[in-house]
Amino acid sequence: MAETEHTGGQAQLTDEDQERMRRAVPKGMLASPFIKGLGVVFDRYEPDDVVLRIPFDEALTNDGVAYHGGVIASALDTAGAVAAWSNHDFNRGNRASTVSISVQYVGTAKSSDLVCTARTVRRARELIFTEITATDVDGRVAAHAVQTYRIA
Image 1 (cartoon, rainbow, N blue to C red):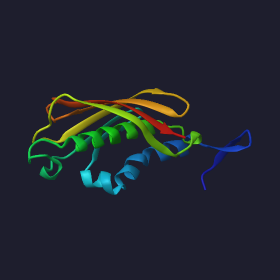
Image 2: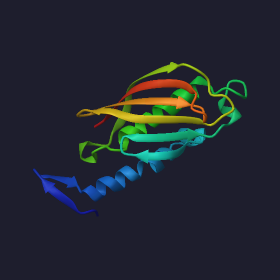
Image 3: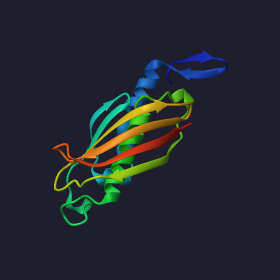
Image 4: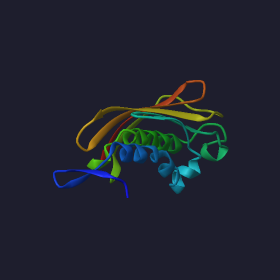
């Protein structure tokens, strides 16, 4: 069992435990059958800064060319969630869900990997606010989202 510090009667995770748990987040996300089915790959995973990519697959499109909007929304939501977890204090809890997400579709991603860049804007007691942008590999924006994520 990991060594802990005791504060106020509650066992607190060490910095090493926290880092180990944060580093496990991408692998844990990829264990989800849905996320795995999208083919998600993490290109960058830093505190409050995540880039995920979905390799192009005709099965994820409307017409063999343009990504289905639900795929884009799922990728945006996943990227935001991972950004929220990437710098989370696990002493505050580990039950989580998306509280809200607003997606604005401003273009299309055609015959290209879908790249989602997420950053944490603010961390409150239980709520984490993220902004996410989805682009094609050439940087053309397909969608933008703001997300509120809760971890308690």
